[in-house]
Structures are given as structure tokens and as C-alpha cells.
Length: 159
Image (cartoon, rainbow, N blue to C red):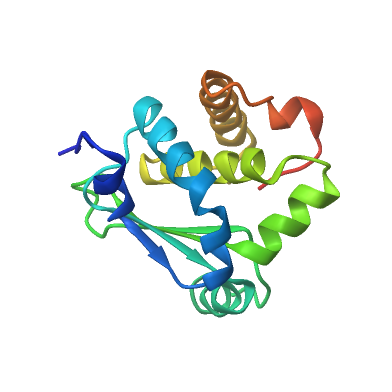
């Protein structure tokens, strides 16, 4: 079941702030999430966790065997019956990537939020054909937010 958030406050209740530095982005993040929800609904069963490199590094090691931080991790609900799960974002990695790629932080974050939500809908990028399909979907959704296609700007980058 998908929840249609009537207010930004209802959407705000789906957020978990682990890293206090994320609070400075909230004035822009909450409207962004609401806009994303209008084009790619965030279900009742989805939680968005705004964390840091240290926490995500531990999770990445534990669940993926990669002992390093990453920008976003997505954990689907078990069983596959409902669309939802947890999406965790690492502030420091996202900031570093945005700076390296000369992209506005909020544009990069919007891309990663959409990326995580698409994972919860079953999209993946393990194989080339899957990656291309996911990238096209991301670009289309970002276009609806008036955010440039990151794959055209940085075609060799992969999430």
C-alpha cells in the first residue's frame, strides 16, 4: 500500500537523523523529499536514515563485505510482498562526491534518494542492461525535478 502524504510533516515522520550535521540541510531537504514523493511515492514502509561515513562503513562491511563507506545503502523489506525498506545516506561521502563532480549537493542527494527508492522497487545495476535501465529511469525522474542528468555530465561514474 502506498501512502499519499498530505503534508510535509507526515513525510518528515519517515526520517531518521543519525548525523546531526544533516540538520542544516533540512530546510532544503524536506521540500525536496516532498517533490520526489510527488513523482516517485515513498511508501509507508520506507524509512530514510541520514547518517555518516562511520555508520555506513560498518553496515557496508557487515552486509556487503566492503570495508569502506559508500554514499547510500538500501535494505529491502524481507519477503518481497511490500515495497519498502530502509535507505541510509552517508553525509561525508555524498558531500565529497558532489564536490569532486562539481555538482550541487542537493542535486546529488536527490539523485541518491531516487536511486535508493528505485532499488526498493526492484531496480538494480549489477548487470549492464539493468544499470542502463536504472540510469534512464533516474535521469527521467531527475528531469521532472529540473535536475540535470548526472549520467550525461559524468558518464563514467557509477553508483
